[in-house]
Length: 271
Ligand SMILES: [Zn+2]
Ligand SMILES: [Zn+2]
Image (cartoon, rainbow, N blue to C red; front, side, top):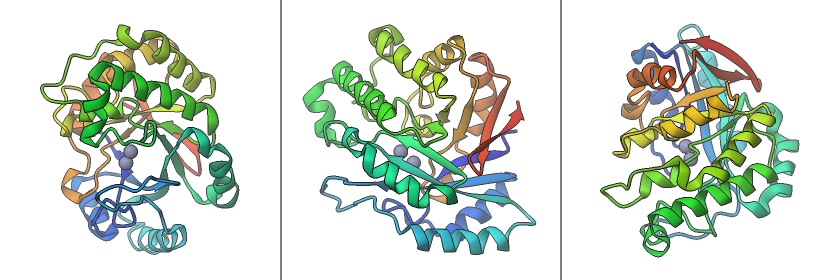
């Protein structure tokens, strides 16, 4: 059994209503040993119809986490993380954020949620780019973002945009983006970072987690050994979503262990 879920949102994230305590109770119910909250912080997020801005009250989040992690410490380990939405122009701003607040986090996820200021979640993204080019542009932006901000432990949902390709979802082929994906994976490996396996792809109806099995296999082939696991749940019922599928997925891709991070240092768990 997978013992930790390290990509979780609560009502401190602008797109979740879930009280933190409900999430902790669900994790205990599921028998998890460790969870890590990773609230959204997307600086300079463009205005969108829903009005969500993905800002974060760092101190309020920290205080609530401290209170509840202590309250439940005998039953579960609750870690304090953050999911940073990176954009190519945000390097200096995120470095300053890290300088001021970085030390308090156990775990920082590097995520790309926007391409050319547009979230692939919005329908007009794939309507204007088409499937293949839309995904390709997403990878290009991700590569730029990885180069501008380095204070993270794991690269989140590397093919996030694929979740929102029109249905039926076109077949993914590594070869279509081979050079670019090789450059991304090589960069992640050379910086000694982890790659996240995020099961919300399965929840979104894909046949694969984010990222695709071919990307996981290639990461391993290129020498990548650091894997983190998360459901990206925004409500209790989605916690550890399809985690029973993960051991087979990871073994098929060549891995015999995964990791979670505490005070930004890896803790290794054998499969
Ligand atoms: Zn995300
Ligand atoms: Zn997330």
